[in-house]
Structure formats: structure tokens, C-alpha cells
Image 1 (cartoon, rainbow, N blue to C red):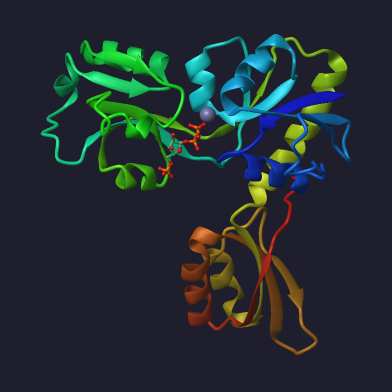
Image 2 (cartoon, helix red, strand yellow; image 1 turned 90 degrees about the vertical axis):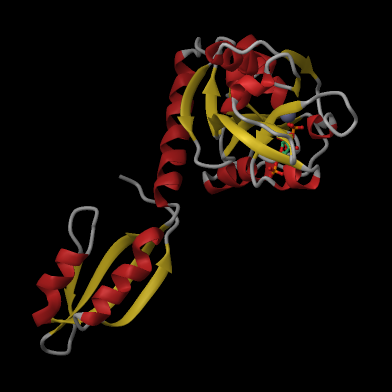
Length: 283
Ligand code: PRP
Ligand code: ZN
């Protein structure tokens, strides 16, 4: 039985719960309980503050966890990063009041920087050869400059909305981060096997994200051109229609290229193009 720690509430919670659900693991979402038993997988789910997840995993209170790389790096504990999960993208950045005359890292020398990430900030300041005063605060870092507690902040930026609301401007993107699956390094064989199963499911879900299943009718004369246009896992599937000289062509396409490919396919004579959602790719 694996114990997984996920964020109780906040940016990563919903995506964690939905990734687990896609993997066939039902968590009782919105539950105020600290621990719940999952359905569909031998797993217990612990709901914690994101800041506490690396420590919970390092101590073995949880076997694995889902948390931002920002927290993993800040806590510098003995946990393994098993796989990135493709959501919760953000960065930790230096931000200053909108009209400050920021010129570069040297501007921070002798100034006060408020942050919940003193370890990552100290490392970066050292790299820049800049000496500044680090003020560690647990939350609401973004109000520190307005209330006169700091000249700059070092905090998570995702959409950038919080900075704008607080009259701040992002000037240095220091640490890029996304959600990762972490594990304690000393899992026993049984749990390691369960973790492998979980990773296999996560991977097939992540692989299928942003992918579409596309079908179209195509005349025989255009088949070769269509195959040249289309990426495919091995090669596109080609099925004869009952109508002489026509085929049905099936392929998996990334959303990023979808509309460009469809334009090219129509140009060479593809018709009746269907675009379907894809749930899993099991390789
Ligand atoms: C972070 C950060 C900002 C906000 C930035 O908080 O402290 O408040 O997100 O996001 P935005 O650029 O999209 O506005 P988070 O939700 O991680 O909560 P926490 O710091 O309390 O863990
Ligand atoms: Zn937090």
C-alpha cells in the first residue's frame, strides 16, 4: 500500500486529483480529512500543505508525493524526483515595484528581499555576487513592498496576475518549476512495484494529453501525399472504403500541429475529417 501526499488546497490540488482520477484512482476531493483511502488502487492519500510535502516524504510519513519542484529545491531533502507531471508550471522570480529603476541584479545589493524561498534565493544571489538582506515570510509575500517591509520580492509567478494586482514588475526569472512526482529513496520492493504501476499509468495519460485521434476519407491518389504530411506512431492506419478508389485514414496528431495538418490534408483532397479526443496511449 502506497501513501501519497498531495496538496490539500491551492494551485496543484485540483490537477493532482484529476490526474489520479484519470489513472483510475478515486480520491475523495474537497474532503477536509487529512487522510483518505483511495478507490481503484492500493493507496492512501494524505492532504498536506505543499511546503510540508518534501519533508513528509523524506521522513517516510508518505512514500510518494506530488509537489512543485520549487518546494523540492527549497527544502533540499533526501527525496527522489521520479517524473515531471506536465502541470503547475510557474517560476520563482524577483519582482520590484512597477516604477523602480531596476537595472540588473546589482540593484538588489544592500536591499531587502521578502521571500518564502530563502535557500533558492541565497544560492542565486551568491551566483550573482550580490549581497542583499533576505526577509523570510511564510505567505502574502507580494504585499511586503507596499507595506514597507521590503524593496523587492522573490516569489512564485504563474499567470503574473498577483504581481499586477500588487503593483509589482517581474525582473528576473530565476527558477522554473512544475509539479513532480517524488518518492522516498528507500521504498521496499512491494511499494516500488506499485510506484512502477502508477508511473506507467501517469505516463500513458501524459503522452495522450494534447493529442487527437483524426480520421478522414481520402482518394487513393492522395494516400502517398497524406502519409508524407502526417506524423504517426508507426505509420497511419489505412482502411479501404466500400466505395472503389477511396480509403479511410486514421492517425494521432498533436494539438499543436492539428489545424496546419488539416489544412494540408484538405488541399490534397481529404474529406469528412473527424477529430476525436484521446484518453490514453499505452505504448
Ligand atoms: C503563489 C504566489 C502568488 C501566486 C502567483 O502562491 O505566492 O501568490 O501563486 O500566481 P499568479 O502569478 O498566477 O498570480 P501559491 O498559490 O503557490 O500559494 P502558496 O505560496 O501559499 O503555497
Ligand atoms: Zn505553499
